[in-house]
Image (cartoon, rainbow, N blue to C red; front, side, top):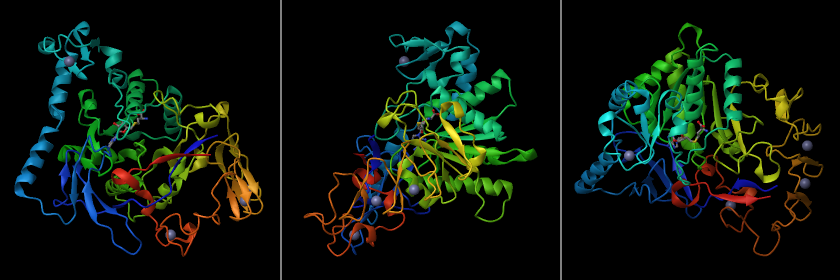
Length: 470
Ligand code: SAH
Ligand code: ZN
Ligand code: ZN
Ligand code: ZN
Ligand code: ZN
């Protein structure tokens, strides 16, 4: 099978984490992030600020060198631009509109597909030529069905969970006894939790959605939705949202809270980890937990090939074999074989043995590893683990002393397993380091392969580029 892997080259940009302060320049998505151009070895790259959330220059072309002096005129123009990009309504206005909307007779409750808004009685004329669809009762409770999924491939495409995955997540969280779910970029999960509560079958679960998609503010009030950017931990409506989050994270009367995040799969793992740390820190303060090594329970949904980068940032997480799939992503489907298998996994600090993966879907419990694994992930006695990451059955190489992908062969000249048609390290044009091009060492021992440098990458400020490998 072909899987999608991140190109492991770091001649690009590195994200520099800083404390956001008032001097950090802002774009419409809040404080920008600082990147460093990785140039020649031994040379410090020039640093610049760019948009935290989008890698498409057409969407946000913010760019500023760190040491650049910005004129007052440009500063003002920027502020005007940022104001212009604010949502048309405040959260409070949205709530007031929602209350007016639900007091309309059911057959007058309409949603405009063209404008992506709920239409009030005195606004129908303005949307006269638009596609209006009914939005009463059940439909109003399923905003993810009314709203058109954002499909911007580069920054915030919305991939909604299939029924199968959503049910699995809800079931697992309920079985673990969580009373509150902080949904970070998981609007469909939030919606299903609320639907479940409305049906009144089980014990109600509280849910708070943090998402950059402001259209959701039309359907939820301040205690259910915060307009939030998870790449810079920015709350657009800062005071009210911060208070809502703090409130939510307080576990009173023995309540248990968990975070479930499904971020866009760009390369900014380090930025996400920094935001999630700050959420976890807020949770600790609310619980008056002492010590920085206690972390809020979390499930971070991300492709398996980011495992190393995620563990670099959060060594306390474990990757589970469960394959997450999406309604509107043809490539990421469950139970397909070959490259059609979803590469998306759960990274969690909940003990893996406690998360039961469904047997009827092909998962089993490995008593040695004490976790549930995919059926093709056979336990290897030599490695002492169920080694497969990508859903295929891996095989043990005695020369390498570890399990490798089934398509790999042991290469004598490289002294390791690789794809049969790989460029050998000894062959012409392949000498030296593939990371920094230095002729004095190999990539394996490259001094520029520092921890953390992997999480930024090339082109378009910090985008992970995907490359097909076998
Ligand atoms: N599988 C999830 C949706 C994941 S798609 C579900 O079914 O609920 C990614 C989500 O993250 C989208 O809802 C998108 O609006 C949100 N998002 C994208 N960029 C974001 C950012 N910078 N900050 C916060 N949320 C973001
Ligand atoms: Zn309209
Ligand atoms: Zn092995
Ligand atoms: Zn080998
Ligand atoms: Zn090197």
